[in-house]
Each structure stands twice: as C-alpha cells, then as structure tokens.
Length: 465
Ligand code: F0G
Image (cartoon, rainbow, N blue to C red):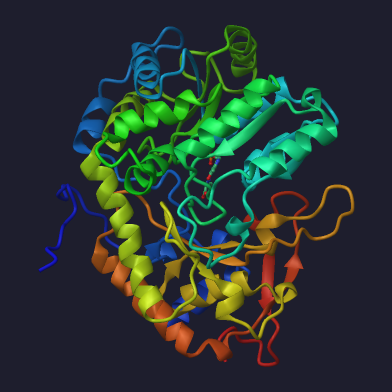
C-alpha cells in the first residue's frame, strides 16, 4: 500500500472563508472588469492568485514579532536577519529591501548602462521592467523546451548555453552587465534549473567576466527538484543543496514573500564589496536605512525564522507534494496543464483548454474569470496580457504560452481545498465550449495586467453561455 502523508504542521488559528453565491460572484467579477487582480479579496473563496506574501506564518514567527527591534538605526532584528542570510545563503554582503522588486531596482540601476543586454531564463514582469527602465534589452536564453507546455524535461528552467554564447559573441561581454538566472522559473511553470546548468552558466560567465545574479525568490523549491531529480543529490540535505546552488552566483535578488515564508520583505545580496557599498547608498534613497530597508523590525524577525523553516526537509517535501496533489488530478482528468508540475503552482494551458479562442481573445484571462465565476477560486492570467507590449514597436508581445496560474500559498490551504479547485476546473473543462473570449476595454501603459479591464465578446454579453 502506498501510505498517505499529511501536513507537517497543525492549525493553531483559522480564518473564515467567504462563500458567495453564483449571482454575487457574477456581480463581483463585473465590478472587477473581468480581471482577477481587481476582485476584492473578501469576495474570494480560495485565493490562488499568488504565493507572494500569502504565507501562513508559524507560531515561532508570530512569537518573534513581539521581539522586533524597531530602532531607526542599528536594529538588532536586522543583525539577526543579516546573519541568517549569510549563514543559509552563503553571500558575504546583504542589504534589506521592502520586497523583491526593491532589490531589482537597485541592482538594475547600478549594473545596467543604456544599450546593454540582460540575458535571462525567461522573463519575470517586474524584473524585466526594471531592466528596461534602465535602458537594457532583455534576452531570453532559456532552453526551447520551456516554451513547450508538454515537453517533459526535468529541468525546464535551464539556460541554453548556445543561446547565451551566441549573445555574448554578438554583443560582446562588455554590453552584458550580468546574467539573471531565476531559480525556479515562475512563468515557465515553476520549473527548476539543474545544478549542472548553474555550474556551466557560472563557468561560461566567469570566462567572460560577466556576473551571474540569481533571482532566488523560489530557490528552496528549486533545491528540492535537484534533490529529487539530479544524480548525486538524493541523499543530501536541502540546506546543503541550496548553499551549493547559490555558490554558482555572484549575488541575488530575493523576494522574501515566497521562500522566506513571510508576508513582506526582501533583500539584495552579493559577494563584491564595491557593489555592496554602492548598493547601500541606493538602499538609503529608495528603501530606508540599511538596517531595515522598508521592513519593520518585526518583519525582519519573522523573516530570519522563515528562512530556516523553509529549508526544513519535511516542509519542502510537503509543499511540493501539495502542488502535485492539485496538478496530478487535473492530468488524470485530461485537463491540459504545463508539465512537469512545477514548484509553486499548477499552470493551465489556456490555449489547449479553449482552442476556440485566438490569442487576441485572451483565452487565459477568460479562463481565469470563468474559474472565479464557477467556484470563487481566484487565479491569474500569465499570457499575452502579462507579457505587455514591445517597448520599441508598441506591438503586443506574443508569448508562446497562454497560461492560467493556480498558485498555492505556503502552509495556508489543505488538500481538501485543492480538491474543490480540481472539481471546478474539471466541470469547466467539460463545458469549455461555452466560455466566451474577452476584449480589453481599458489598457494601462505599464504592467497592464494589474489594472486592465475587460468585457465578454459573446453576443449575450455573458462569460459562460
Ligand atoms: N522574481 C520573481 C520570480 C517573482 O515571482 C517575483 C514576484 C518577483 C521577482 C518580485 O518580487 O513581488 O517581492 O517585488 N512574484 C509575485 C507573483 C508577484 O505573484 O509571482 P516582489
């Protein structure tokens, strides 16, 4: 018998969920312009919009919050966080930021000059926005399999070294300020990068004196996949795998809201003292004193503990297994999802789900809206709307993947919640022909997915017909 496992924690405090009627959800969706970002959270039953800042903290974290040192300068909570990052992640220098994009802003400003190229393994919205705002062009050097939703590659986040070499030869290493390597790759489906690939990218870049900066946002999840899939790592501790991974980088940006198990916070870390000193100047300008950087003392206490809880082998094993609990049931029912199932989310392949809609009818946006209408489950479009427009031509960027992300918050929902999500999606899949496409009625100039508004294209004006 395959014995079942359960959450490696028990529940100490609960929050009641909203359970709206179909008509109430319809009103709510209308008010939100069919954009799940604009739905009020009090109208959501199961919130899978993001795994960012939505973590349930532990009793130890809540306890430590009372001990936060709220001093403007020299906070002892910062000392604790700084020492923890150095110890667990292995970087020499650390600076606090209010969240991941605060670190991205500082790194991009200091490293990029106008006309530069920043290679990366698929883009992330805020990361690319900061690179572009500082005059760089982002170049995707991820392996081709990452753009194929059903290619079963164990490390779909890997960099294609030939693509990277070609770029270096074409534009010259002096015009590449750093390589940005995301571990795992969010928009590819939470797909990991192999240790070997990290090592090879680092070697190639060292040869050309190009820095490698990791987007370490979901690095613990990446470490788990290495343990599971890469030869030589099965018997190792997650903590040791993580340390080795990060040793193949010169620094990282971190959104603490994911793998540091907190609701707010982030950091920028590096080994180069000169960069640290210059970064510290910008932390003061944008974030706050270098001993808090946009976080309260209590936030830093919680993050120092969360960083250690995240590398607990039982925690991370359950985390990944819950994502699989959701994804594998969808696979069994024939629902098209991105494979293999990734680290933080299950991604529905909206193009395959709704083949009657063209990309200009926003299939992923429509499917996310339909899921909310059907069951109050909130998800997120990751397709043509999220990809925005080309900064030079103004044309829509056309990503190969048109996805709906079902992102699992850490330690928040049980597998029963996952089952409710599965049932709703399977029902929608059965009546997929009835789901209408959308038109965009309002388009904001930057990061349009947050505030864009839509309406159904169907003659009836209904999303589900
Ligand atoms: N990098 C990656 C890979 C991310 O997924 C995010 C945020 C960031 C950087 C930026 O971090 O939000 O702390 O400023 N991702 C969230 C998401 C918003 O829903 O995927 P931040």
